[in-house]
Amino acid sequence: MSLYALVSAGGSPGVTTTALALALAWPSQVIVAECDPSGGDVLAGLFAGHVPGKNGLLPLAMEAGRGADAAAGALWRELIDLDYERTRLLLAGISDPRQAAGIAPSWPALAATLAAVPADVLADCGRLDAAPAIAPVLTAASLIVLVLRPSLRQISKARQRIELLADVLGSAQRLVLLLVGEGTHSAREVTKVLDVAVAGSLPHDRKTADVLSDGAGSRRGIAARPLVRAAGVTGRALRDAALAAGPAPQARPSEPGLPYAHEAGLGL
Image 1 (cartoon, rainbow, N blue to C red):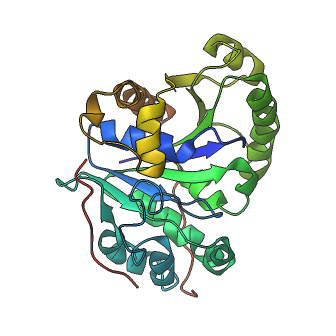
Image 2: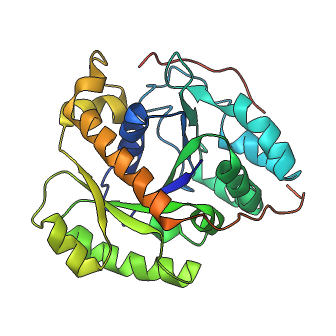
């Protein structure tokens, strides 16, 4: 299966909301992994604080400190259900950005675990400014997806961050763009300016975005809403792009050196 690293250039384009929308429409088992060093949003957002934050990335990182095998064995018990069928799952992120330094040595083993899991993984990696911290995840990804609004401000930010990505990884290959909402530039113009292909786009759907970002409003019929329908088309395009990119680089786990609870279904 494939690891997709979703990143932003800044300016709140909605990476977490995008990852959740993609997950709800994904055609196979999928894990949303909150890898943003600044902290996760889903427990306080989509779950509105109703799910205790005992499971997730932090306890998994503690296991990863003992090696990739330990992390692989612990992963499934750290996941939280996003649906009743357990086809859409969440690896909740850290709750405090100060925890990022503590889990830093575990990123190679975490990346190897996410890349090897028998399910597709949508890793919400936050802003590309944090690329050096999460370089193992970006390196192991089958595809890096830069989420941005098609506006001049976001395009300007993206150009510099793409250069940063190339500096960190040695190249900006395996990178595609995912446009969200409305803006001043067409997909063709964005591709021409940034010299990166646009793999898909998602519409401005405030009602559904409010559910996914803040747990606000009804979840009834969410699969039929514009954002999730478009996410289904975009998800298939991302899978095709990952397939076309070929095998991802082999993630290398770190050597050993660096607690959990129960799943809670959302019923989406």
